[in-house]
Length: 291
Image 1 (tube, rainbow, N blue to C red):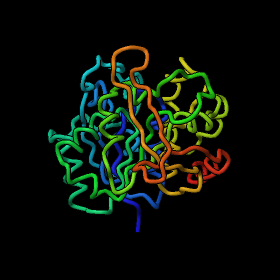
Image 2: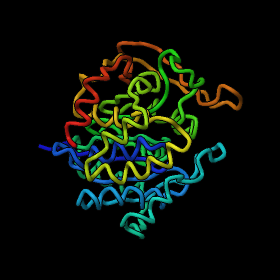
Image 3: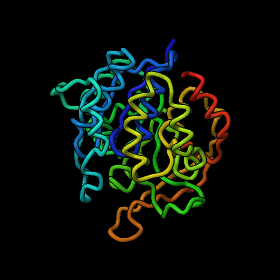
Image 4: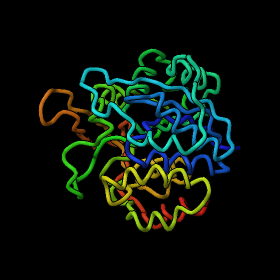
């Protein structure tokens, strides 16, 4: 049976969300049961997700979610890839229902069957867990791109962006017991990167055409793509790509330079399974074999 995936995303900022969504849409093993958007301009982000769904020929319910973080100032108030909407067909309107209730209805209506793949700030997911406390244990699993749990090998600073954008929400999510939680942090996702020229050569499939179009805005500011979110997406279907360690995580929510920093404590009884190693060659093989 296909894997039922509910995708919570801040598509429109870093290009990796679109790269991940294209792969999910191309994957015959994936039944994408819904998409929720999070962070500034969630309706614009929903339109960007709609572009890929239309190119893929898939009808997927897309519901805009939270625009603002819980207690900090918005740190990504706009979706920079919005100009690409002028060049691709997309839906203009979306359901007016509450995104968190939409998520809860899907999960409770399919107990033990849905993987919640969350690759943006954790605002929607934290609200989901607080408003619907029965939901976490009704998931098949929670799979995250979130945090940093190992050494800073790439000089990216002390925190990971999804956590930094809403540290209070991340603290809730990382400390909520679910049926299973897999976490993919910055320390391993930074090991799966591709330079812009290589991306332009390899993103030749029709479904990757709008992704490449969106990527050109990204390349105006960055010389490469880091496959943060695609790594988490592919790991849903192939856990051998990463090696995991059990433990506990906490997030610094205090004001100051340490805000958003994740702290990891290994423990075989811990509720989280965090990735600590990755096979980049296997990852890229699994990603591109669908295109």
